[in-house]
Image (cartoon, rainbow, N blue to C red; front, side, top):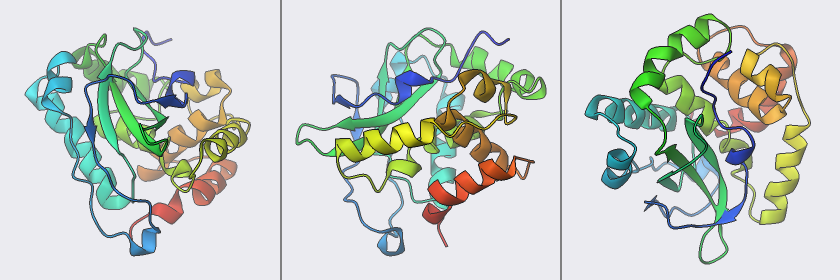
Length: 218
């Protein structure tokens, strides 16, 4: 079993925007067919510094975000840093801004050693623990925690859909997803394998079609 894990429950708590080191991208919510702007968002310097990111790893994470955004419409409104649980790598989820608007953010963990994580990623993949083997895959996992909720306008909509996806557990995608017993993690891990052309259960492919593929850029 791996010492490190991608966040599970902590990724989905709806909160008011707290005093993280934050970069906000204030895009409006419009239909994908009308949305042709790319995200202009990257890790803030203060977050990279406090997270102890090397320039190389910072560049890899930023490149992964840009790559995912070139493939899918993603409403990533902020990149933050905070002191998460020791084993958390990233956290992703919705929060309410100061105007009560639903936003989506990515959080880096100031307690994490990202250089060590990068060296262990291939082993986790080879052991079947995780679906991803590099930072691009892990960012894909996190973006799959955002895209299903991008049409949610209210907190109530988000909570209801969040619970609906949570209940759709599918076994056999990765050891991490199996241990979580959580449909949200199954969907995110399945999306990673889908992008990499790997086998996933038919039920997982259906979930990806239902919750993610309509955000794919044409």
